[in-house]
Length: 350
Image (tube, helix red, strand yellow):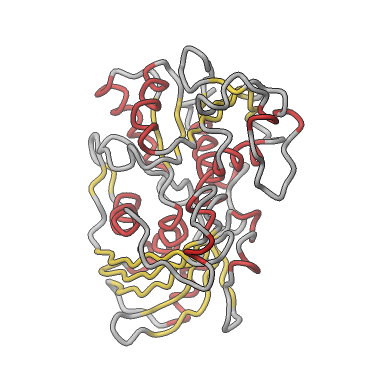
């Protein structure tokens, strides 16, 4: 297939750089435009961007001129948004009105009834909200979102449990990596030798998003799944990889072997397996008593696989476990790219 031209909004930031890095040599997409702030516009991308990833900046983008985030300046059928939520609230609808599909990492539109929060291996059918969104808002394009980086791995795991046993209550404590705060992120004197037990807006996102993602598609909106989530979110001195300690009350009581089998055996619809970014496997279980660990396990499946370990009985609920996912790959840029692949497959992009 001819590659689809794509633009990356906010390409000089941490998540924007991850978009650029992951899109290099993508079989379906090619970066033809990048945008930045007023400070960086009209410069070469290589000059405007302080590259912070360990992988080198792709040669193919170094000479691109950084543009302003306006549809008049950036004309692409597919736009990946790494914008801060405040800016995304104004800029992303302008691109959707102009006819672009916006795959957004921002939270600005996640909770709108007609905007899907997509995890292709979990809820690909929710992409059909695009049709209602276009009618309601009179857009030629659309906005789709990926979840908060902490919600991602735990929701993949909860999907496997929901499908097998049903869910009643979920209690989670997150240990979130520094890269989730962007760059320059948390000041060193705040995080060294420390854990920060507050991340603004994070607990609300973790409590709301899994229920929307695992809910039922209705006319023009999602009916949230019928279980509750209680979350504590914490910033820890780890570079990449969000860990979630999760306790779950099931609808149907199951023994540990059955729970493990349900998680390891979970497979998305067969069509999803054809997408370039589909995790292989979707979820992997580690037997070691001290795994998963961010440094050892975050890049499993090129950073797209959810890693689970320490499954055991819970004295208050039914089961408890530890879940790990790569926050800037599966939980951010890689997730948005995966969503775009789904939209190509479903005919929203050609």
